Structure formats: C-alpha cells, structure tokens
Image (tube, rainbow, N blue to C red; front, side, top):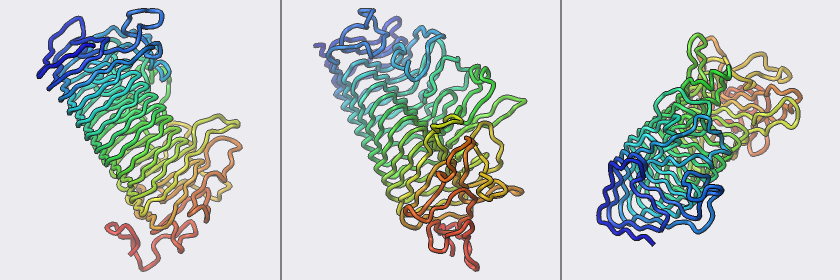
Length: 517
C-alpha cells in the first residue's frame, strides 16, 4: 500500500507524465494541491491491465478486472490549471456506446476502477479539459464541491467531455455543489463528436446523488452539449434545493451539421439540462431562471433552432417532489421545457411557469411523442402528471409557426379547428392529467396578427396515429382532446368545461395574484 501523508502536496509543471500516477492504494493528508500539470495531475487505476494490451493505460474500463483501488484525501483538494495533452484520433468512433473506450484525458483527477473519497472541500478551476474523470468506480465528496471558471474545450488533440465526467460510477456529493462560469468556446466540431458533452457534468450509465444544495450559474455550451447536465442512461437524485440560472446552449455551426444538409431543434437542445434515457428525482424545489437554447445557421438560411430553454428530456422520467419554477427561459420550441416521449411529474409544492419565450411553439412547455416511423409501432407519447399543490402558468409567449423538422405542428382537421394557435402549453400525441385544483392559466400571448391560446393539443404527422391519445384531463376525467383552449383561471375549475373559459366579466386576470379577480 502506498501511503502518502503530507501536510501540503504541491505538484506542478510536470511534463511528459502525470503529476502522480499510481496503481496502488493511496491516502493524502492535509491540503492537497495539483497545479499546472501538463500531462494530467493524478491518475489511478485499479484491477489488472487492459485486455489485449497488458500494462496499457488508455483502454476501456470494461476490460478492467480485479480489486478496485482505494484513494482518499483527508483534507481539501485543489485542482488548478492542469491540462492533459494526448493524441486523440480524429477518426475515433464518437457515440454513446463508444464512450467506454475514450482514452484517458482527465486533466485533474482521472480514476479508473477506483474508490475515490474526498473528506474536505474540492475546488477545480482554470481547466480547459475534464477536471475530474471517473470510469467504473465510486466517488464520495464529503465537503463542498466548487467548479469555477473552467473553459472546457474539445478537439482532435484535446478531447474533453465535461468538468466532471462519470462512466459507470456511483457518486455522492454530501456538501453543496456549485458550478459557475464554466464554458465551452465556440469552434468547429469534428464529425466524430459525442452528442452529450457538457460544461459541468456528464453522466453515462451512472448514479449520482446530490445531498445538499446545487447551484449552476452562467455556464455556456456551444458544442454537442448542455451547459449544466448531460445525462445518458443514468439515475440522478437531488435531495436539496437546486438553482439553475443564466445558462445558455448555443450550438456552433460545424462540419458535421453542414454535411447533414439540415438541422433539427434537437441539435441544440437543453439550455441547462439535456437528459436522455435517464431518471431524475428532485426532493425539494428546483428553479430554472433565464436559461436559453438557441442556435442560428449561417446566412443565407439563418434558421433558428433549439428546444427546451431550461430542460430537454428524451425517453426520460423527471419527478419534482418539492415544486418546480421555470421562469424567463427561451428556446425556439418549448421555451421552458421540452419533452420527447418522457414523463414529467410535479407531485408537490407549486409549479410556476411564466415569462418564458418560444420562437415557434410552447412558450412554457412542448410535449411530443418519441420519434418513430410512419408505420406501427409509433413512439410513445409524453405523459405529464400535474399534481402540484398550486400552479401559475402566465405571461408565456410564442412568436411564429415556422418549423425546421417534422414536429407535427398542425391540427387534425377532424378536430374542427381551422387554424393553428401559439400556446403556452403545446401537447403533440401526448397526455396531461391535472390532479386537484388551483392550476391557473392566463395572460399567455403571441404577437399581433397571430392566434394565441393557453393550451394547444396537436395531432402528429404520422398516418394512422390514434388522435384520441392527444388529450388533457382533470383527475382522469373531463377529458379534452385535439383543439385550442383559452383558459382564464383554474383549468380544472367548475366553470371551465369548454374550449373558451376566460375570466368571466367583470373579472379580469391579475398578474400579481395569478388568477381572475
């Protein structure tokens, strides 16, 4: 066993090798600082060598066997201005299934088949590549974790995924978690680029548990990345309150997009979170303020695309037990939230969705079924279980109905609707069930010359799809299907049974009270 007992460890300016590389158990005492290492700061690997390449370091964690390493830090851990200059093949097969094979590139800590324990606070700053990479192992951060002013950049010789990248890891953050002003600079991205890069956290087939408050502010993503959270086939639990604000995703126009000849809103999805095949549970209130997911193709097209100003969820489950607040977010489709074949459940606290803007449709939320083909079986629709103790959906807006893909933004003529409306809540081949009462809608709008509504139920483009699947209901009853609905007050109120139940005269909508007064 390698035992390192240091009051202060300062490793810097190492070239040609990591600041410290170990295949044995290690323990650090006191404050540990890794600063300015050019070939990575700390690399650890448990188990045996790589299959087919004994002694190799850069191999898939799937090929690792044997007992994991135990590495602990008894005091604070500081990672600052480290880098990892490795040769990254431009032809690397970048996709979700190949993530297990990406070579080592952790500029700060890169741990494979390792049990990592940090007892003091962790600070990471000034990195242009992944600060903490853990592949196949566990991680316990007992103190606060702070990531500030990292500028994560990716390219053929500088591969990068996130400030924190987890693959097949069970990680627990016991202290507060802060990720602020971590950015990915705009650049042309090689065709071989993963779809789930992110500035703060990327989780692949992992389980993350945040047991204290989470704050993510002013992060920017410009590649295949959401700026705060990229989640793939993972379970994430937020036990404390979370504030997610001022983050922006602006997908850079790159060779791979240009070669495809077209873009879709999903090419720049998730102003803060992009989740795919994930399960996320939040015990306490989560707030999304002033996030955006907007990108524009070059002239002469100048097509605006993006989805989910705060959150884009695909084939995922999102459960908010302590309330949800979505305010001031912006995206071309789904100004606040965008759901594709996903479940959204707000089961406690209040649900506030206001002042969000969609360039095309769904100022507050856009829910659509999963993408499929024009023949059975079609993708599953999204399901929204709206069980908050109270709700306020107001002052959301949309601006036009120009689309870049087959999102199905039209009404089924059989529904008797002669023209489209721009809605705060747009549901396409999906269902909403409001539980209880107090779900207030009002003062949602669209520009002059367009038709606005509070709720729009659309039928998707696939031939033969069962239009009755598109609906919203109250306590499973009073089902309403395809159409445009103008609501003034409680969508499940006794006086709201038709398509038009605005505030009865002489009552008017009160923005301050979020109800008819």
